[in-house]
Image (tube, rainbow, N blue to C red):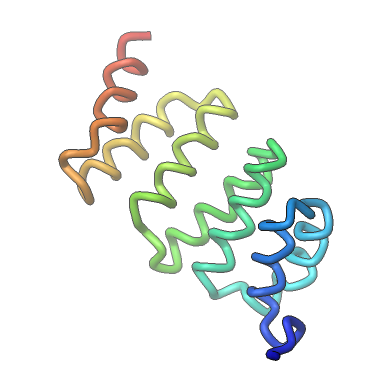
Length: 119
């Protein structure tokens, strides 16, 4: 059996799967420096903060994931939801437009833009 300690991202994902969110966040923060250039790690940490409803801390991780080349619909969707949680309407709309650049048929992004632009 491969030790989870030799593969820290696996350990982090396991803690999250097991619902050990506080432990996962503590462990993840201890890995920040080592994985500062890893888009996947940034996405995982952003998601962990989002799960515990800490949008303020989730946002920089999603932004860093995108900056490192992790720009995909899933990351942008979570970043959109994070902006919404922070009541940042314009930023959420911008994320939706970015989603539509990657996936022009993304119905959720289209609907959210309509909803937010009419508020």
